[in-house]
Image 1 (spheres, protein in one colour):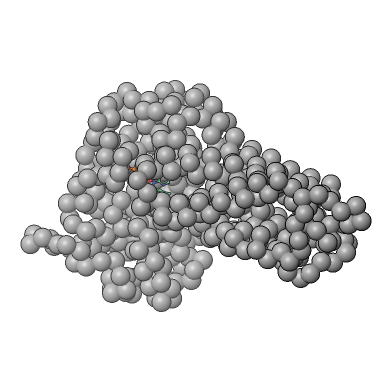
Image 2 (cartoon, rainbow, N blue to C red):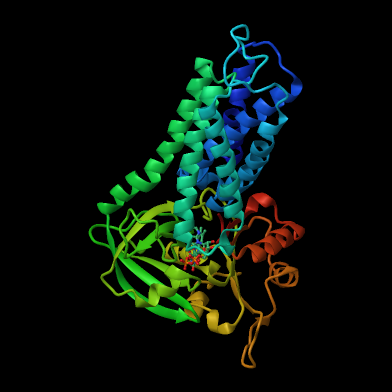
Length: 440
Ligand SMILES: Cc1cc2nc3c(=O)[nH]c(=O)nc-3n(C[C@H](O)[C@H](O)[C@H](O)COP(=O)(O)OP(=O)(O)OC[C@H]3O[C@@H](n4cnc5c(N)ncnc54)[C@H](O)[C@@H]3O)c2cc1C
């Protein structure tokens, strides 16, 4: 199923409360009030859907890609914040904390009492804090894991507080159908947390792995190899990634996304290429063989599945080579006859990993390996510069790439350029699959 299929589902969930409210046929209030209520309800269904978007559901991420899923999560949160901010200020109708007996339909007064006002204010403040601390996450003086924990706790408090506020004071949410809708959506939201942080770790406990080796590959870049304690390693499609937890309890939040760089053909072990960036990755050199590891996955859609491509272009920036290595290794293991062109950009030549093996992965007719280095030393014999329009034009104009699939992985800035340039070269969007190594 194409990813676009998910969009109508999302719209239905987001706008269902408006339809359920309208169907109640209550007497109309001033437009401002209806707008305030409508924005509040849409914001709330967006906020509850955020739990599902970040809940690692393969039915979503395998279609859209985890980076796109999380981008939708970010943008939706910003839209919801806007609606939440204006929601209380739009009302024209007075607030009274005691009901008027003659106003059964809540047309003339807002049904706020002290408790529902407090839960509304709590939700309002928490949504503001959660979204702003996500936007400026990298500037906060917290470890990523601490931010994730606070983000999750804040989200739960918001969801529970706003559910109370909506059910206790919402004019339309007093109706059993709409109230039921909110309760089901809250249960789904909290259920997705239970799945990710309780059920998945419980499953991981029964499938532990252990580190079999850790080896320096290049400048600040390591190869980590793990083996399952029993049986075969996890089944995955080349190009996918897992949440990897090395040396902590499976219930810990200390898990990071890493692409699998080995091929599925390698049944009894899994490898990763990991660049030193922060706490977890800088501590890798101290990890010793035998350390326990846990995996959650596989996730991601940077794969060759479902394509009849006539050739494969793999374009990597730095450690973005990891998932593309898995793909190239599997193509080699399958003796796939299609041409494979690898364009591999790095800042300095000392960052290149598996230089010799990469040459062996491009032996089919029409295949090529192009190294691009931006800060080249005097001994550098490859191309100098960055992976941009010039480089891509030079490489791909020599090939008939009309039926090729382009897989791109690397830092966001490189991906933006490459995606635009490939489109300029006439590559249809449907033949470009990319993955960013960054998201909220
Ligand atoms: C789909 C995907 C695949 C990736 N594959 C690779 C790979 O094959 N090799 C590689 O070297 N890097 C990969 N990364 C990047 C890698 O996840 C981060 O570099 C790593 O998590 C940094 O952790 P840290 O504790 O060392 O640094 P920190 O200082 O804690 O984090 C640095 C940045 O990494 C990101 N990050 C950290 N922890 C998480 C987390 N749990 N979830 C999401 N983002 C997080 C955040 O943006 C953070 O700002 C991948 C990222 C994604 C999203």
